[in-house]
Image (cartoon, rainbow, N blue to C red; front, side):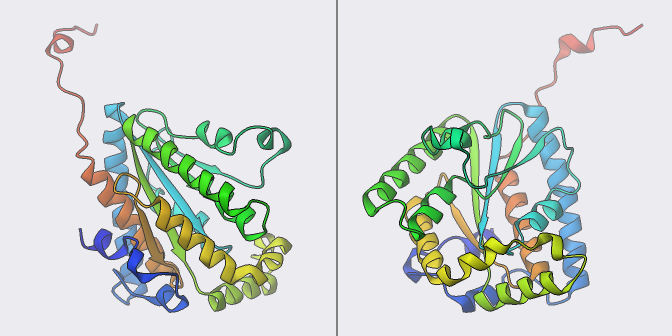
Length: 269
């Protein structure tokens, strides 16, 4: 598929570049047309999700990562707006609680993975545990590499037990984040989104870019691939993510369960 091919992580690139956040992959350049295309994709995703739910065998895990203000929440709302909520769930991972810290770092994550027939979207994920601690020096290189191995084994286990994994990094530039944070401060209807902690992380921008690239490069696999979505354009971001989700579901070759002749013989009074 065209969009999957162009968005798949390219390890030869050797790092994230701000200029790539403006790349045009699938957008037409007409925001109205692109929004309509995204809405159509959302309806197609809904139909595919119904097949997944009816099949009750396989699962889909969508991992969404990105810097603050990248638009993870909006992307989820746009992509799954037409889906039946019985079969779709979002899980968000913030700073771990004391109880979570008392266990291994994947303990809280495993409890949120999809059940049979479900789509679960991770708004941030287990990758936070090789990003924030790494950037701030709370774990060393040895422990970070150990966590990479645990993540790879964890995702292999999910894949081998029927979970299709789609991992997406929404890539915005530092200047675009600046613009969005300023917009939140200046707009009364957006101030509620502002978190002072976002400013605390700003000086670590380059370190986060390096940590993201290393984490994605090490854990990218055909069974759990990483895709980079240019996110400076919100319209293009939503369109590309919807395309990736739709194509991933299509590639699963979903179908309703086989017809049961025995049930057709039943009489409903």
